[in-house]
Amino acid sequence: MSVAATAIRDDVAVTAPASPRRLWLRLLFRRKIALVGAVLVVLDVLVALLAPALARWDPQRLDVKARLSPPGEAHWMGTDDVGRDVWSRVIHGTRLSMVVGGTVVLLSFVAGIAFGLVAGFYRALDNVLMRIMDGLMAFPGIILAIALMASLGPSVANVIVALGIVQIPRVARIVRGSVLVIRETPYVEAALALGVADLAVLCKHVLPNCLSPVIVQGTFIFAAAVLGEAALSFLGVGVPPQVPSWGNVLAEGRLYLQQAPWLTLFPGAAIMTCILGLNLFGDGLRDMLDPKLRGATLKGE
Amino acid sequence: MKVYVVRRVLAVIPVMIVVATVAFVLLHLAPGDPASVIAGPYASAEDIAKLRHQLGLDESLPVQLVRWYGRLLRGDLGDSIFLRRPVTEAIADRLEPTLLLTTWATLVAVLLGVPAGIVSARHHNRAVDQSLMGLALLGLSIPNFLLGLLMILVFGVWLGWLPVAGYVPLDSGLWPNLRSLVMPSLALGLVQSALIARITRSSMLDVLREQFVLTGRAKGLSERVVVYKHALKNAIIPTLTVIGITFALLIGGAVVIETVFNIPGLGRLIISAVLRRDYPVIQGVVLLIALTYTAVNLLVDLAYLAVDPRVRYQ
Image (tube, each protein chain N blue to C red):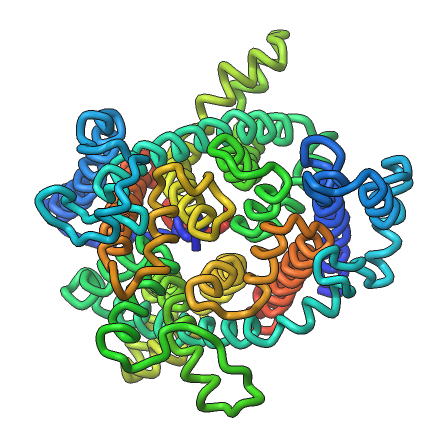
């Protein structure tokens, strides 16, 4: 599930013979959808940045007298079982989700790109590195994350590390695939023949040319990280329960589904719009950045 | 072809070594002494020493690792610290619900996803296609545990059609068992079906542009024969891979869904083990799942040989 977002890199685009006018219309339509996705993502980022101003209460503030009160004037999204304001917790949860998503992308990019570059460029290391990556990928993402959380202990930083480790092999595979092709190009051969150091060739000539599929993958990793954090916290093995997070609010909501459905509906809507935005944006980005990728994405899985 | 099969089977070995090593490392990743972490803050020094010996932590790391491999080869996963019984037994007890749940969910996913993909491809870019793909995108954007919660709310709480949560074992009759699994299987399978629908649609579209489809139509075959006999056979291959790949999502999703619906399967087992720091159980479940996932993907790859003659003669 949480990995659903990473695996949706099937191709959607198909170019049937069409008049230039219709093709143009279709591209516009596709970009419009990507635009909707981008707007949703930007909205989430804005909410995350402005969280302290938007939240009307301290998300940790307990008000036991007002526990499980339905949405109303004082609490727009109601309160939870210890009287915390759900609106404020969802808003601050957005902030947490954005931080987790962003840092997981960063972590998996840095490590995954490094491994991918080295594995693709140096034949000797390729086998060892990629077998380790294969081994890591033999664990379903959420299972590996759960097991890692057992050892690391519950905290925001550890959730980021666990979800990052899950994504590293996926990035490494994509980068390695591109490097294997780029390594054989004349310009890389020329640079090496001129005596340019390996590291310089890798950073200056190889890396820039293998970035676009990775960037597209980044949007899906972001979505997977947001889903992963929510799932881990929902299961009680993610961020500590007092931290405002979508998954934490949903975990409480499960216990009070009958009396307080707002505990499930509001954070649920927040997750859905966020993931939908990322998926739309990612799909659109892929179509725009790399038309060649269409139809070839599954093979890189 | 024989060479291919042998190579593909042998490729599983390094993967399994890495998997076993990762499971071993899990125990040693925790900061500090694993024995005192597991025993908890109130354990006596004596208890901790006993536990350290029981887990073999008093040996050097390389010795521990070699012993670990040796035990795994014998199928010995050790004893659960909390349940005080062999991990293999604890797992066997919890296998039924998880197996049934994943099987039903796969059926839901395939039976909904494949036809939706075919219909979408046949009506490419028309309203049916666009609404189906819109639905699929929506399906991919809803986490399965949220879908589960919403289903409980609608069908369990508001309409009262199905049990809100809980699991009825197969022993108590097929019908009650099925009833308890309807919502969990749908919640798990629907998200999967979205993925399968998208892949089936795109590979179907690719195949429908092939020459042999044109030939089929030109010689007057009915659209039904062209689509279902000739095109589908070729389009189903990428779908097969996806079913293999999505098995990871399925089993991972099952772990979460079991919590939503209070189903005593492997998912509940591993989550309660995490909360109790019962490492042998965590390692055992994780290993079993990784092994199953690897086996499923091996089978999918070998199934290619049966389905696609082109792979066979390469």
